Amino acid sequence: MNIEIKGIEDEKFHRPLQLIANLFFEDPIVSLRPLVEKDLTIALTLDEVDGFMKASARLYTEEDQRNFSDEYEKAIEGEMTAKERFRLEKNVLSHVYLTVLQDYTGIVQKWGILTGMRPTKLLHKAVRDGIATEEAHRSLKENYLITNEKIELMQTIVDRQLSVVPDLYDVRNEVSIYIGIPFCPTKCAYCTFPAFAIQGKQGRVDSFLAGLHYEMREMGKWLKENNVKITTVYYGGGTPTSITAEEMDLLYDEMYQAFPDVENIREITVEAGRPDTITPEKLDVLKKWNIDRISINPQSYTQETLKAIGRHHTVEETIEKFHLARGMGMNNINMDLIIGLPGEEVPEFTHTLEETEKLMPESLTVHTLSFKRASEMTLNKDKYKVAPREEVERMMTLAEQWTKEHNYTPYYLYRQKNILGNLENVGYALENQDSIYNIMIMEEVQTIIGIGCGAASKFIHPETGKITHFNNPKDPKSYNEGFQEYTNKKIDILNELFSKY
Image 1: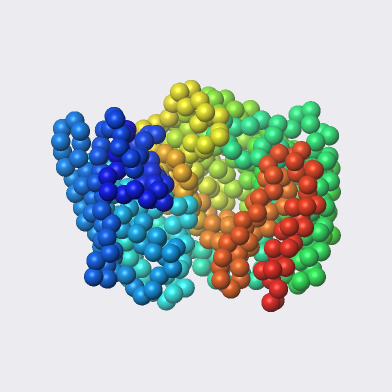
Image 2: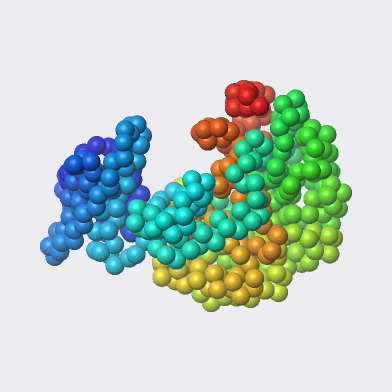
């Protein structure tokens, strides 16, 4: 689909217009310059008139000369910074642009003009600002074109989060810790996380772990000296249970020695996502260090699907390792499912839900497949045939119905670029089994310190809320060569953020 935009020449608008076009078409070309070959022409206007920012859109087709048009305006409230002005311009322009594309395609975008990851932050802001619920919902519907269905989902999640973490708006002076272990048995076709095949790489693993222990000690020292509490710790990756039981034991011993007041950390989670990495010895280590929240991720209960996406465990192994973990005292198990995996439609996903019912994990994260830019699946799309939008939506509806029937409540969500059906990923939990870390990372209410290979730090200023990002390198070799430098840089940022506390 080639779309020529007329009337808007400023390149700063190209990305938001492109992102909205991506919601309707696969790999569309959006050009602010004349195109020799075009399928659609959309004429846009953007003007400031009598204290209002006004936009209009007129879409017409080259083939059948159909026309669709819309107008929208928003009041300009006082003096604006350049950033605030652009946000307003983008909002009114996106509003009319989305509307004519919906009219043309007949596809309603339930998330409206939103293309960002964290829609619930909008509702949290309204709560903090003291805006009445009805007014907040009206604003979401009018300003962002979000449907009632998604607004209701957002409200359910915000209510649940505030019940799980009543001091959610007051944890900015604490931090959470993410520890990245960049190894897996194999790499899944949809994955872009740091995940290097661990077989035959023991030298690289040893070097990485030495750097990781250093980071943990230095970061723990800073936290103790500055009297900063830890809210949650999350071991991710890769697959943290890819390393040996002995290496895990040393790692958790380091955590208890290095970090302050570990006994009172609200939650410690270890992703054991790949069932083929779970052993009785590793579960014994987790139990030794009082860690009982883990993930065991089937993704699908169809063996052909697992083979197609590069997961080398069997369906039977997932079930076996779940029962093993449960029998050894793991009483807070999360499982991940993915909607829209290659070759899967409603029957396959129904089967996955039926198998999940036999296990009833404490929490369940339902992901919608996203074609991540550098993944094997994206690079070879022809090889991985996925269900159409309507089928993906039916699978999401099944997940919503199933979780409700089984007393799971949605407690966090996030969205991704190139996600099937323009849907979302939703975490569901039984009562009092929600992941506090997932709430912290998604709502961006406190600093998350990333430690380890590929770990992303997100520093939240305790007063202004300004976000500063810092990423450790994704490959173990680069990490091993510079972990001291990365540690020092993060401590410098922390010193600046917490200097008044």
